[in-house]
Image (cartoon, rainbow, N blue to C red):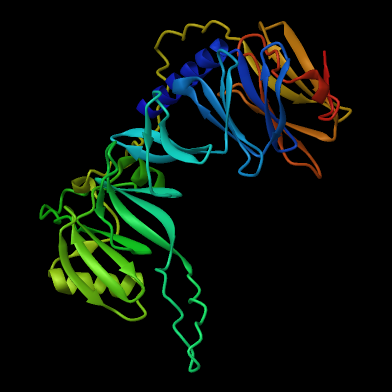
Length: 384
């Protein structure tokens, strides 16, 4: 019941936010653009990706090419161009940050405020790991002169390979290095929770990758590896032991750590690591029978709703049922156009064979679609 109430609340919040926006994203044949609520095109659909940042009333249009990425304000229509914008890159003290590149400078931008965090080293990816952040970067091998040949002539220097490295940083606005010794892999380990001795108590946790990511569980130990060289650290990033293990895989590293520490470990976090599991499914209370002596249920007032309907000619209509008797048709789509209604987010998906999907929002009260008229013909849609 709580989950149902939460979904309803989220849907109401989304529709309220949607009604307050002056600009919205839309896509045609898999490419994203932006339109205002009057159907005027603000940005042509030429971007491969779109990300909504509702707290800041922003839309990110991303292409990850020579084309600049855009951060667009859905209330004012203001836009800013950047070399690249990577959303949901890392979480610092519970706040999500995007990674921005602009005019050769790189920094993190809060997705809740205007806070920015510049960084010097050329990090190109971040990973949350408990109380820390692991950042990836690439660096060339040190310069090594080529020496001389037997005739005393100078030889060219050895080719400096570009190698991938990682670094452990503090999870705060300083991004201070904690472990700066190069490693290319890491493996988080968690102490196995003690089993309850009361056989009458059965604890069930539903574990998903999404909930693990959002919980940022705190590891008990972590192994940082570079080839056959490995270093085992505790939760405070204090070195426990450095060791060599040839041709390692996760099973070998796991077994080695258990034998060394003499404790039971797990690769999955638990509540003791700050992991928040998904709520258990509610048990059924059995079949409910209707009491023949109870008073008849009061008829609920009619609530308008949107729907799609397939016509005899194969076309599809999108309509608003305003009252029990009155229905208002909003548009009709050709038989070659497949229409999907996502009424909980006031959005319509369009599928046409041989093309990528298209999508656009509609007014949650009137059903007016937020799509520039120039694309109606391409999608096989006729407004009614």
